Length: 446
Image 1 (cartoon, helix red, strand yellow):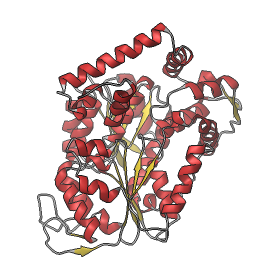
Image 2 (cartoon, rainbow, N blue to C red; image 1 turned 90 degrees about the vertical axis):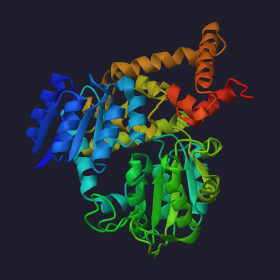
Image 3 (cartoon, one colour; image 1 turned 90 degrees about the horizontal axis):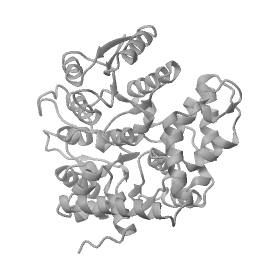
């Protein structure tokens, strides 16, 4: 029986999940605080953790970090309100497997748990997945797909830049499938989810006895992908010492396991991705310049969903059909107001957020048409907030909000002594967004 740890201070949600999970073949264990949840996680073995972002004694980011330090392989699903989707996306970058928004619906949470546990149980199948997907009809995406066709047959290392959830792994898979290596393994690794003290072992492997807990020899992802393609997502999160070892692997095509001096030849096509601008990381001395040039043989900039709005209806219909198949429903269309709202919403979580919203809407739809009643209140509020700014670009209110935002950014830069990485962390945004804001507001840093 697979065991699931639920960490949430809401007794109603805990009771709901405990009954639901126990009635569907799982063993649920409940913790109402982060501290008690960590105590249980240290003492017992769990197959999955359901973690509320807002806890009385800590927050989801700290909890996720502690859980991953104890056991990096246990998947974590974040439970959050719709207004916290941006934070959930941040937690995905930090290693969460997925997120689910309140209110929780039985079919939705059960399907998500089963999907993630099956992925974990069969990593090879996940890596070799033939998942259906579409690219959209926008000019930007048509250009990107042409670029993938050009670079796929080559041996060039590809750098894909784009926001979390924008489809970077899909582009990497598209390159692999069109390459001469398509019949070999495609291995995806999220560098942001690997604890720093385990990165060496996860990437390059280790030999038995090389460190505490190394009870057997282990092949790293480079060996697992030998002959095929290795996709390294969020590469900017690797420490400088691991970057040095990665550079050697790319240049010399050899790796060495932790605790072993022997060189192991590897034949791997590397595709890397990041949600930040690595040039900024180089300037901040957080990413090696020689490694940057090595991985940037061919760059693809993947636009956010809000930058290709003409693709939104295409993806929405695709996700609706997927949800119909998953949920055994027969929803056919969206009403006009829904279509307008989908265009107005800023999509912080990009395609992942759109897919989650559409699936939940299909679940809640009783007839054949999705209406705005299926959307959570927070979604309606975000759309309402976005509309005035779009329609009153030259209004005094808009100018005031711009000045306020500029002032906040200036104060953060001053507090961080103009270290842009630290300022971005203070503002809870990535470096790329901060650089865009600096350029937008013409902030002089000299």
